[in-house]
Length: 242
Image (cartoon, rainbow, N blue to C red; front, side):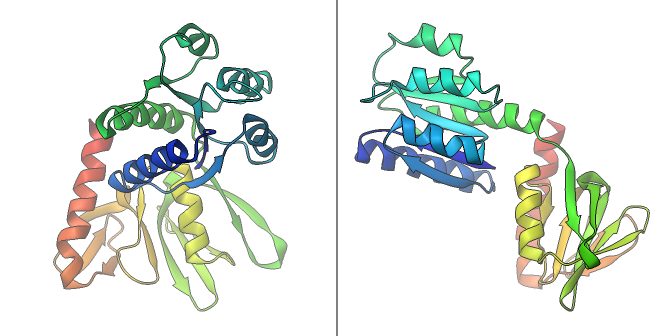
């Protein structure tokens, strides 16, 4: 997931960035965050990056945040937008560009979390489920992330094991695969032990020293991390089922 923050006041920009990091940390989410002081700079970057979420100040020199949002909508991008401003006077403009939230400054972390929750819900609904695996000899294979049971490191390559026990070899590193999966989904995949990535939907049970998958595969976990792994699983599965 990619997030852009734009505010012409450095102190405000830092406040919004810190609030964003706190939210992502609390929700166990991964995102790349870019910051901008000018709306034009954001638009230039957005043409290349295509941000999933933009947090926009409205009253900025050069171009208003509402105008930046209109430009984003003209590009037909499905970027979620949260406005942050000191006044309600632009609320109608925010509605016209289909902003997900309109947040008044100064905001609290609670109100910020509420705004981010709404944005993440919309982003989650739009996220695609396909991951592209770079295989040996230049082959690229498309795989539905939900069909993955687990991924295991194997020398300089990784083995992606599907629910039907099919094995796909990829030249991507575990960290690259995890980052891609975290971008596609919200906490579905975890790294309970060095050399493994596990789809939490594939877990049958968690024991003190191992995770047992529905396929019968056992993946070791350090005894000291048992409670953390179990809590992460419960938090994710409870959140999905709510």
